[in-house]
Length: 416
Image (cartoon, rainbow, N blue to C red):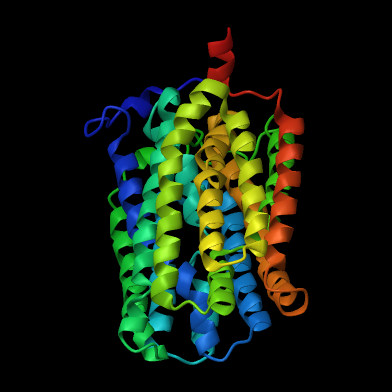
């Protein structure tokens, strides 16, 4: 895929990534520290406010659904209204969501925060930030460093999230009342403000190309439509399964089954995030040897076997060990998947491709938490793990069957 001469400008701080890329990496860290502790404690906080497991699942579903809606809208309007301007707007939305949580302990505050903000309740980030930054990153480096850029991007995200998970124990140190959560909600508020200031420093190079009449190109070209459509459908299956084991639900599972406190939960999920972050570096190296698609699938299947096994763990030690084994493999497909999607569509389609595939993921994921809450109360606490593992393995097999002959341009060139 031809890289524009502009993509080489601004590579003054690092040899392989531009200043705009560095801003994205810094903002990723600022944003995902709060997402780290929100993913651990949000379900527990809702329980402290009097929500039962089913209602907790409904709130989490609403949170994920609105994030999917924002991602869908971004797919069609961001390139026209401006990527930088859109990112600033959603950073302010996080500021508003954090303000609602900080100012009130009423039942409606977390509901409003879930609707307005873009908080992540799973192990990985979803929402409009991810889609826009995914479209921008290929413009900040050349094609041979694209997968590395996505690996570092996700490594920083999960590393920062691990720090946030450690902070989830703060309310317990302050007394475990609903008031003791406020310092962390204040941090979430401030991360939105910091994000808006960082995005304002990005250059015009991050914007999509426009024609001479100033009109944005069509959201998606005819050539990319069948590829993106099939990817979106398959990613929906994967995320529907992933929604059963959103981090807030897994945290609540350990809280109920093993009576763990927030400090212990924070340590567990910090460890899972660190293991996940380290796996991203391995993913880039493996992808260079066997290709992006094979790395996605071959690492994902064993991780989902570990995932289903968590439900049958005889003790908390075994459950944590299986969870760590799962996390050491499960997210290798994230940077490789992002790089693969950006590689198999042309540059003008990247925002729409990222937005539509992420929307399908988030929409599918928005349904599962309420079903997981229902399954926990009727079928057993471990039911979501079994459902998630089975659905995700089915996705892996379908993904490989459908796209084994569709290779990124650099892999075709290397083979020749």
